Amino acid sequence: MSNGVETILGLVPARSGSKGIPNKNIRLLAGVPLLGRAIRSGLDSGVMDRVLLSTDSAEFAEVGRQAGAEVTFIRPAELARDDTPMLPVIQHAIRQVISSRWCPEIIVLLQPSAPFRLPQDIAQAVEWLVANPQFDSVVSVEMVPEHYSPYFVMKVENDRLLPFMPDGLKIARRQDAPKAYTRNGQFYVMRRETLLEKNSIYGENCFPFITSHEAVNLDSMDDWTAAEKLAQTFFR
Image 1 (tube, rainbow, N blue to C red):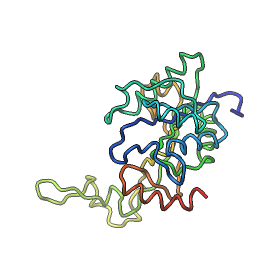
Image 2 (spheres, rainbow, N blue to C red; image 1 turned 30 degrees about the vertical axis):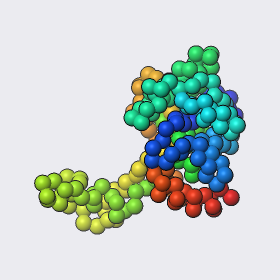
Image 3 (cartoon, helix red, strand yellow; image 1 turned 90 degrees about the vertical axis):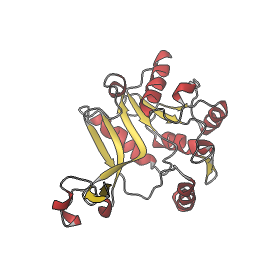
Image 4 (tube, helix red, strand yellow; image 1 turned 180 degrees about the vertical axis):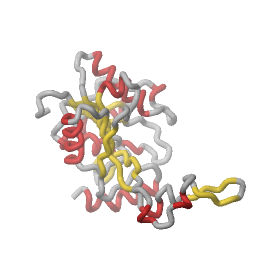
């Protein structure tokens, strides 16, 4: 990397066996496999020393190599189940890399399910974390529409409609509610110590990188239909 200090690993996790969208991670979006779009965004950011694919599938591994990623191991089946959390997947990949005598200081998680990311955003997030050693991570988020603010969301308990937040009824105007944000999965930039020593993706000090461009996170076929429409203009 150009800063000459930090070593940066881009990590693309792509297991087989997706149920919501069959073979999601190698499905073509605007002519490019989904995992390939994640790999390409990491390479195009210009800040990665290496981009690595973590997958349990030999077929996916070959697709990843063709897209420009390194595939130095096959992920074990116990880390590729539907209910496998992301943290142990990342930790496994880091330890595999360290065992080959290369020790990245910053890891950038690029999930194929969030293909509408901008390489320049990745670069800015990495550069920000490098410049601010007091922070443990940088995570991409987007603002929740005002009418979906937690202060206006309701819940049903015992057939009664109640405010989701205890003080929800105290805020009458939307403009008075604190702005709310949601993780959009476009990227997670983390220090190695955050992942291995603090056993966390976020750590104690996580900086929000707020994105505002249109995006779709892919979990269902309806999401895929929306993504195909957005891809017609986003990937020109």
